[in-house]
Image 1 (cartoon, helix red, strand yellow):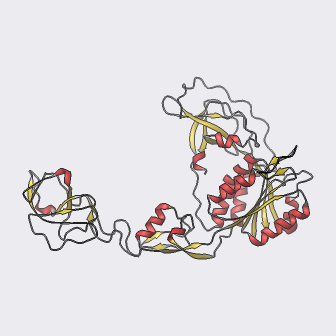
Image 2: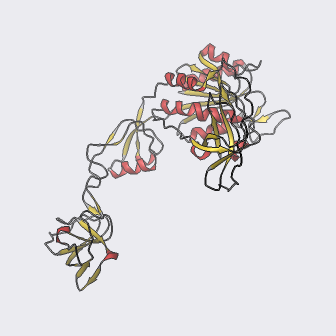
Image 3: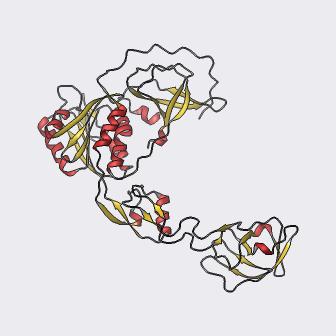
Length: 426
């Protein structure tokens, strides 16, 4: 973050424009309808632990053992019985041996005896304290312990991490680095996971050209499938890329029909508004059903949702920013639920806006912004000048998205707004 001068004054909010289209479906209602349609995938498979990263756990995993399996030392030092240590002055103990990680100490120490112990080594019988080696002095086979030591210090107790038979991981958890490490700590080499979600993507439009080919006059390169591939790869799905489909209803129907038989979900971009060449919605109605096709959201108003065959269908807008926003705030959670995973809410943070924000009531808006800080550390938002839904470079440059709720109106400069850092959105 860069430092900014403190805000001075509280300018009045700009006047709010008339309410937005009352017939458009509110975002929360659209999400509710989508959620009702989701039936999680139930097919499972067993994978080797090295291949489990990013997968969804199929069932609760119970701990097969106590972790750690023994009381052990948390630091290099000397172990002894706390009962034999003076509370007032130094205590001198006889060092009778040493023990390393991975093996138990042979024998049982008696009163007034200490053991040199390494991190991870099993605690000798009767010993309940470890003092770090840098706090003691050793001379002629004796160790001098300073006062103030407490029973249980610098120990890892048996089962303090996991107890045998207790849940270690819950069904629906996505297996990240920590989860895979935990599974390995239980000695498990294979794990049951939900099969990968199959997601088909396609772009529609006669004006689209594939990257890497010459660009004829009047055409544009298809960026939407690259954006969707990146977002979907983060989710670990099996991707079916159907490419660019021209504005031909026969070809589009053939592609969508095939995807409905092969995929769990279909995501298309463009073709869902009211233009003469926008065929997606009518084909959805022919092959399946359309639940809604217009939402009170900016960017992203023309969005069709329904079903084709057994697959959920998301007909996203054509503009690249709208594609990314609608995926992040509508599609991603639905796919997570569909894959059997657990949806985690994205936290909303608070900041003051340096710009007055003109906002219509009756729709949810996401505006790109840069993040800085006042001299006292208060987060500050500066809206990016061009909020056009075709300006994909702004999604790369923005620090955050300002979230303007359905019922909110215009906000004056200096007012508080909700925002989400881009790093939290993937």
